[in-house]
Length: 263
Ligand code: T3D
Image (tube, rainbow, N blue to C red; front, side, top):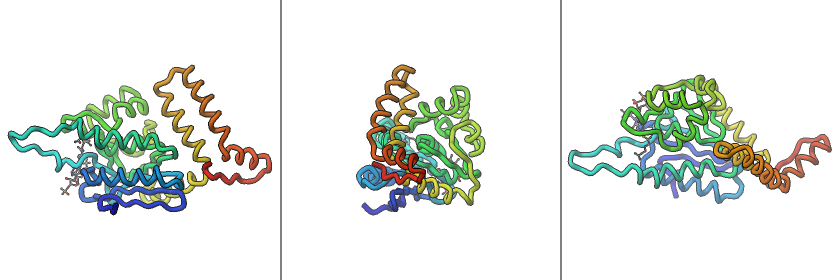
């Protein structure tokens, strides 16, 4: 598939997916959903990818659903948004969260609506200091989707989640960092380099172990302590059988840098 609405490439284990409809702040239309789906399939099937970096072109990261696809003429039946969520947004969220590798997001500008929640679903989020996060849904009569009602209270607590979702106020990258919504706010002119450096770092790390960390931390929100301890036992067993674990221990004992292959 050739891409018009995204840019996508894989190089030395790092996949970079850049949303590319800057005139509408990279809002999602049907074509962009199709192209993102195709790119994610390539990430899943490639076999060499050890980290995915998601970002956007222009002054926005993503403004959620393209609302120019959503106007309803008088007398027409409104579109079934549940169908759109089921077909497009929910599978996207599930795939990003389940990818067996770190998923980074470099929020280069405003992230609104589904755009904000897609960013917050990634494992590590860097944001340009000028970027803003907006739960814009309430302003048009919708509820936070793309996992927002799940992710937000877990990241920032119920009081802040309610405020963000019901007021739709913009919060800055620095506020998002101080609230624990994202990993780090960085200077605008450093975002790209810092995100790429982090992405390249992850391509040299024990990918299977990182995937198991992601699985355990994501599961913890829904597990009680006993269940989580059992899960840690099972995942540690899995990690202990990886070649990268053997390499990590050998390198430590030989006082050298480990060479992890993601195996
Ligand atoms: O429908 C379903 O399938 C259900 C799923 C829904 C998921 C959702 O994401 S619902 C929420 C949709 N998103 C929004 O409500 C956000 C709408 N956008 C805004 O509120 C503002 O654009 C921003 C706060 C994000 C940024 O404001 P600002 O002042 O920096 O920029 P702007 O001038 O509003 O936008 C720049 C251009 O992008 C402008 O086009 P123009 O006038 O230059 O030709 C604007 O219309 C366009 N744009 C921004 N967001 C969208 C958009 N075009 C289409 N859809 C958008 N979501």
